[in-house]
Image (cartoon, rainbow, N blue to C red):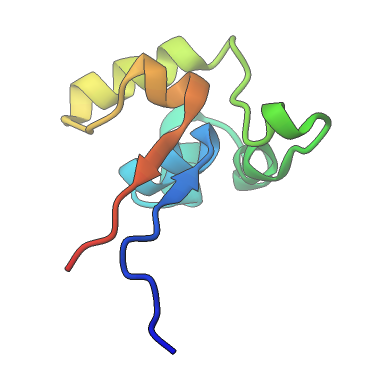
Length: 88
């Protein structure tokens, strides 16, 4: 049995933001929010299509921080998430 090495993983918006900023705590500190608030975004499951939704009121601040810190993050990432391709 062979494993599929071409599998892609979709990260929800909150997961992408936390990954790009180096973790939940780092992102929370930069935003002046508690880590529990930020981590809750990744777990939100009110509607499957809204899983990992980042509240609209904080998205501009995250984009501003990304620009200031040279973090690879786009508005599209904050809305739709990102598909991660496996590395060799």
